Length: 530
Ligand SMILES: Cc1cc2nc3c(=O)[nH]c(=O)nc-3n(C[C@H](O)[C@H](O)[C@H](O)COP(=O)(O)O)c2cc1C
Ligand code: SF4
Image (cartoon, rainbow, N blue to C red; front, top):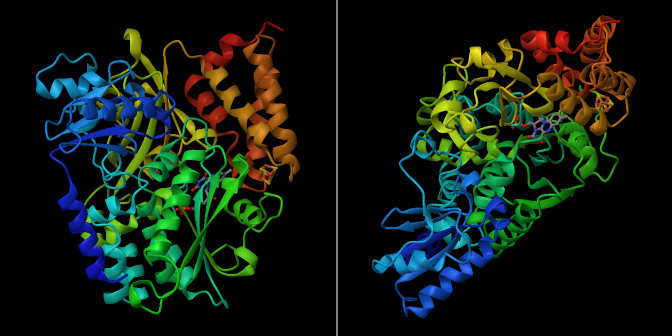
């Protein structure tokens, strides 16, 4: 493909658009609530009215308000419908000629939507993720063309460095620095890897991005391959994400058919291929060294670093490994410029962050907000607080590696450093809200059980320590624990944190440590007399 063909395709799509577009969310959340039947009912109603030439019924990705799903939006009216059923879906078409609307109206002006800043999710809920033509119409693959025809690899890396983008997989490592290291590392070949394992309980950001806009991730990875000098890439996604897997397979096939993957992309001498690798759903396989072992067909267990993947990764070759959302940020950084990206966020944490807002919260779903927004703004303005008039007590960020932040600290900005100073982490974007009825010791026990079950067993502190900590927490929750048990729990937290081999064990004590820091009274109240 050449640029003219890309533009022609985009123009053809634009010309084929109809007067009215009814967008049906068909991401996993809405799909599990009969979204396929809803779309069919709307199509049937349009056909019955004889309006197939006027109405386009489009499958789209996540529309953000997952808790109100299934969701449908109508353009140009801008109307939003929520909690639709296949039975009342036809009234959405009837309403176009003044008929009675039976489906529930949503409020597109609600702060849940208006306070968001879509950068990564800009196409989510708008384009059909299974049609490359939709992505191309939205400007897709033009940035890749620009990179291959106008930029040198070092210039691309420089743009990523200047953007200030930090890895969205959890640790927040500077992305440009990592790309520079891979580019400089000597190797007969190099690899690019996309980490889409996403095993944290309560996290569904990467799944949603992959289900809603897979080409954006492919384009970002291809630009990364050009920048670091790789010709082969892998995307690692868990089998528990079948829709993301099938949409990625479709996207890769379409990109190959259009010459946007493969040899001589855009008539350059750059060759790049992307393959999908399906994981079996082990949390530890999100850890980069375990993930690479799994791609190599070995048991998914971590190994000590150094060597870091950037120097010696897949099959011993320099490997760039980044998170799904990290790659999804590359197109806007190159396209709109690193300065534009750096104007979003805080001094040390640039851009936006996608969070999955869940738990005891009225408006739950997938949100994208500028980094630096306060926890209070997220929980109260976007989230609308806890349901049934309950008080919000805390927010858990960072999954099993993170911690619980009490309501008294909700004016803290959400950025990498601030959350660490509170004993939590930004993590990959899971945000679970707890209300006044939540027992925080039980929350700590839940995360410890998760770590215990997901520990790969390679090193003793994590393998045995998580079991012992889980047993002590169970004793305390069941009111059988003593002050000695609590002291032992604290000692074990310290030991496991400092002696485990990988991040899973090193961070497993965090939910216990943060609840001990802020909610020690709840532990003490549960202790037995002895
Ligand atoms: C136990 C464990 C699980 C992890 N799971 C993920 C994951 O699901 N997705 C991810 O991108 N990073 C995960 N990470 C972090 C990766 O090891 C790695 O730092 C990340 O993929 C790098 O990408 P980034 O620089 O774009 O953040 C995990 C780390 C640990 C220790
Ligand atoms: S810390 Fe846990 S998950 Fe990591 S290598 Fe050791 S046993 Fe495996």
